Length: 174
Image 1 (spheres, rainbow, N blue to C red):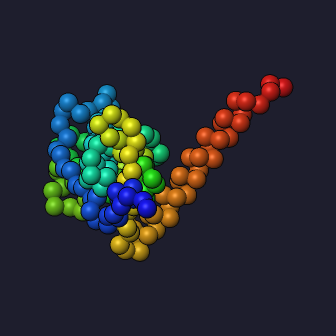
Image 2 (image 1 turned 90 degrees about the vertical axis):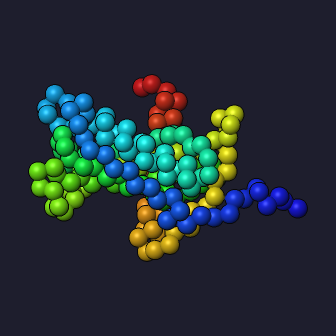
């Protein structure tokens, strides 16, 4: 008879949702006068890590950034909101989707613009740093179901790319 703790109880998509907001300042700017992509990447990783930790109920570490797309430049004074949720779960890993929106400081009250989107893979770890089981994610809406299906496609592509590279490395040179 298996122990009930072997398979964690599932958690809804909404359980993992996290929002962080911050105003971009002069220390965030690159040589071109816009917010440095690395600043936005850290913000993406921070909010994704919070969503992964919330879903898994403990420490989760970044295993991969599957994709990050910068859609619009961000400027000093812009208010940036980062939204994250767990889209898919495996036995110890999770895909977290992130969307950054920005409110321009000089047009306060205008519609927020999507400034970046990203997908990250996190692995839940125990106190020794070893992978631990994560609860299955339970999509709640058609949108959550779509995100779940698309996350499976991204996972299959990651695994196929990894295998193709390994195969190419082991192939004899011509």
